[in-house]
Image (tube, rainbow, N blue to C red; front, side):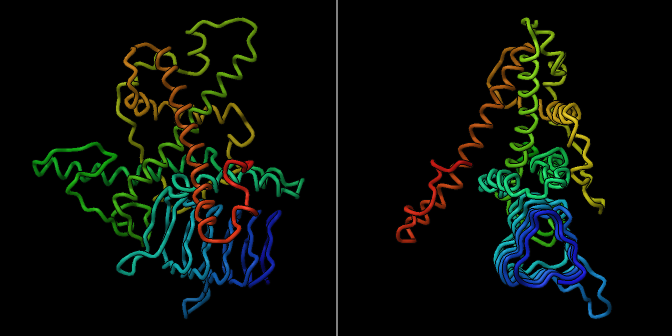
Length: 387
């Protein structure tokens, strides 16, 4: 190792690390190469044989790779500079993948070998298919924090305000192509569909960021686009509704007397909510087209200020409200009924999340038991896992 800066609780026990910022809780335990890497938020892993470099173009060593929080470099992956994954946190570059120069802004993605010599990207894969990884990581990062004087630098949540903003931008990129296809079909005289689903006759494979902003030099199937929209929407709404639930619980504990319905609605910022519930989901303009670093977690206002976090959650809740209301069968037209609907949606999202966490772990249990003799005797089954 040479000219490298290591974050708190980072571990390197093999390979080469040169001219690199190796962030907190990042791990490189195997023979691999990291050179010219800017990884300030760490929390990822470098698999055996990963070649994350070179930084030399044949003219001058002036290239870097900026790495997103929680990036997983798979076995034998080859990364050709420059690459920017800072707005695609907790993404997995699968074993053997060769990643050409590009910028990806679709968080929690899986990148694998694809047909026609172009990598296949599935946005939100970790959220949808492997939420156990995220749940375990939250516990793991908390338990492995040995640098007690650096809580501000190592103690942030994964699904926080800044990451939610990235999910909103990423979802908008995925939705925008659906709206374009709908408009094109309507102009040609065909029947339209909703903006979050492509028409049946639409192109089923999207290639590079010319088709979808933030896709980089990869391809994405229509099925993958729908997975990303679903995963991002569920995460955004769960985050916002958790804030609503926490606000209500905190209010209930602080009150000595029963509040009126109007006072409750006012406290959670839902008075007059019927005025907005009939509108479509607000269209946002993605901010990821500008090449910059994301806000560092400890510089987020919501990192240490509960009121700032609630303000952010409430803002997202109001934007998601039309989508949540339109997906319910509740026809009662009053604010209290809408509050009940939101809490029911919160419960449904939590139940779905818990189910997928369990399923993502139990799949590994079943595969291991079918493949390795005695696997079940020495591994913790999903139903007994503390996560």
